[in-house]
Image 1: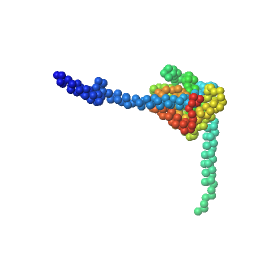
Image 2: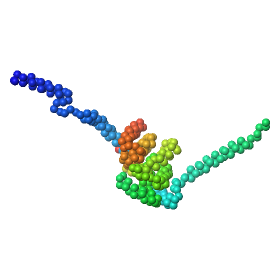
Image 3: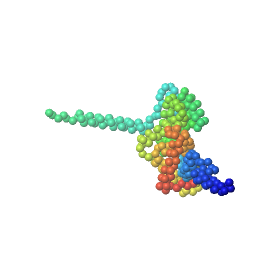
Image 4: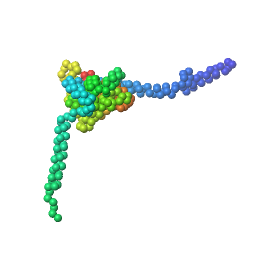
Length: 133
Length: 191
């Protein structure tokens, strides 16, 4: 038995070395999910680093987009107008945003221009002397 | 937003029964809607006009509103968003905005030259933001001016929370690139 002890020990050592090389050995083999997670870790780290790099930009944007204060007069006037509109709506009248005067002026001018153009065209057409046969 | 949504539901039910109760919802949201619109259009006159239109439209469509998982605030922002989009389409040009004192009034500076430099950098930064497409501008305003979460912004813009997070990241990258191109420095004074 003593004569086989040394070769057996050497064989065990070699087998253990091969197992280690193949990913076995005393540690359990790495699962596919663990490998995926290991591969993704550096990427997610780079993402968090990128996010940290962008923090100053976010801070600057935040300071440029601070909430704006509304005019007190405008706030009160709009509330009163909405209250009036709500009362009208309750009594069955449809609520419409009052059309600004500027828009009405443009609308009137545009309609006037169209009517004038059509009238001119008709006058020119009917006013021309008919050619004699 | 959860508690606010619960309050909204009660006020909304009351306003749907009696439009006079709409005042509570108006008081709750007028500042936020105005601020949102102001940052999108860049001037007080149009911001006031569009804020009025938003609330008039909300009042007139109040009875048709149904809570289908979209909170009232998101519905209101959606109306404002559509009106602002129409406004931009009508003008088909980028607005140029004078710097409002209200935007920079709380910056503590003793030196006027430093203050002027900060104002100029902020003006340039706002200019960069206005060059972004409308969805990105809206995302930034809702996030920074209104303080909404990605999920809330997603509900308003009709996108998923993940999509908003990704878009936000890409938007900041684009801003940083543009700022570097224009030579705008990001320092403590600007922040």
